Length: 138
Image 1: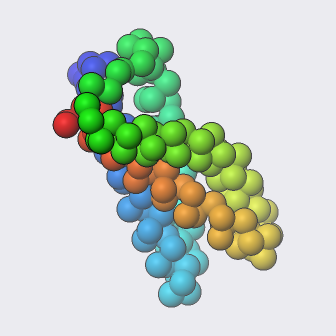
Image 2 (image 1 turned 180 degrees about the vertical axis):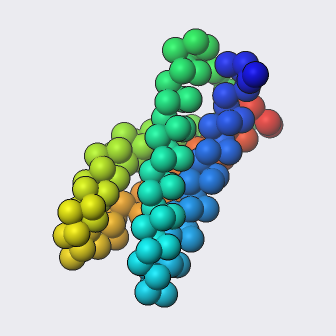
């Protein structure tokens, strides 16, 4: 059974999987495979939901973890972290709105907002992995 201290690694893996599913889903819709696109995007939503639950459980139990790097890497870390946090706060409502429009088959409206949602969600997923690596593996 995983311990709460294992959750940052789990969270990084969930973020990486989400980024992969989002990328494959994008390729699927661009190649006209709407059913595969839908499956990938629903899986990305599920993966991100699992991430959010795991993230909350971890931080309720552990709190904040201080970055111990020194020098220029500290500036890099906080630049990535701040941009990640700001965009992560926006992705939940964007993703929900994008999903709702797709499920209601309002595909033009879905595509219009997905043009914003996808790159932000990808950025948040990838920088989540980067923040994990910098915080726990450097």
